[in-house]
Image (cartoon, rainbow, N blue to C red; front, side, top):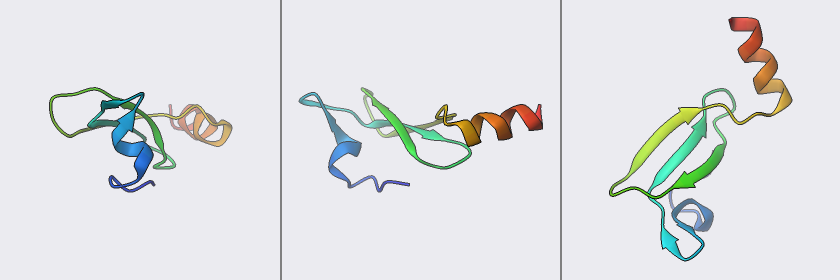
Length: 58
């Protein structure tokens, strides 16, 4: 997982993005979103191994 202090974790296209979308399976940062404070949202990254493990657990 990328640290909150990594360059790509806080700034995207010249604006401050404090929201992070983190994959629940591999814990990689998927994307950032503009928010009014620090927020972490868990979802899935769409990589093959994460999709397969999600489908098997359903």
